[in-house]
Image (cartoon, rainbow, N blue to C red; front, side, top):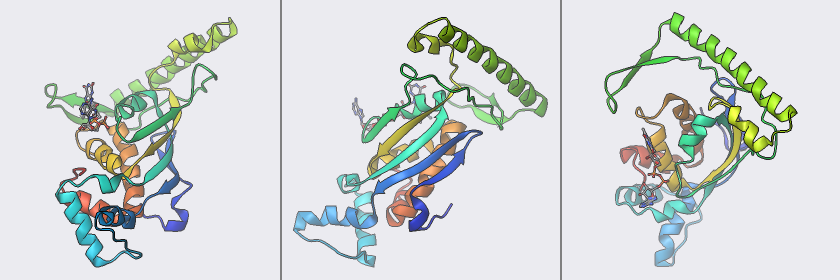
Length: 234
Ligand SMILES: Cc1cc2nc3c(=O)[nH]c(=O)nc-3n(C[C@H](O)[C@H](O)[C@H](O)COP(=O)(O)OP(=O)(O)OC[C@H]3O[C@@H](n4cnc5c(N)ncnc54)[C@H](O)[C@@H]3O)c2cc1C
């Protein structure tokens, strides 16, 4: 995905069957990284130069991480609950606010996987392969039936006067939720190294791929240095 600077904000990219990742705002660029580093010599650049690319690569390689913390990307995310559960494990440099199932009624939107996988091997060494179409179809049908029953139970509990905070026990982890996610560039790189990786679960990886495309568009030199640095955050 390549977005021009004009269209980069308010860009909502569809992910999975009903989700999205939307960049709603950002304050980040390659220049702010070099200026954060140069303040130590009481210097500042107005325009980004070739020399600055070298400085970014040096900072990345030598693990001088703090100059990459002066910025943020703010996203609106719609994803299944089990994806958020993995996402919220990322604590440092991330801020989250999520749709509350205590205060509002959750809408019946559930994840039905388009790609269904089987796992082969031992824990820690699994490889994942596409399931037979018959297995995939059965899973999708059973999920649909299960989600319908779960949501009927949820609505019935609400009708009976059960508080939303307890009625939500009926909502399965495939239920879609929404959150606002803000993250600084250094922490975003750490997230991408773990979640846009072969080892990550396919579903969160789909979101991480889109987040990485936004990152590349906004901080191209930093993104290149991150890749050169073995996709390791400084
Ligand atoms: C493929 C994969 C499989 C996973 N499987 C499991 C699993 O089975 N069970 C499970 O519980 N989790 C699992 N996780 C989640 C994982 O353990 C991390 O919680 C998650 O990846 C966030 O990483 P992090 O702690 O480095 O990130 P952040 O929370 O953003 O922390 C960033 C960095 O800050 C430092 N830091 C943060 N907190 C502390 C602290 N308290 N003490 C010292 N240093 C700190 C560390 O250097 C850390 O890398 C998995 C993650 C992945 C990617």
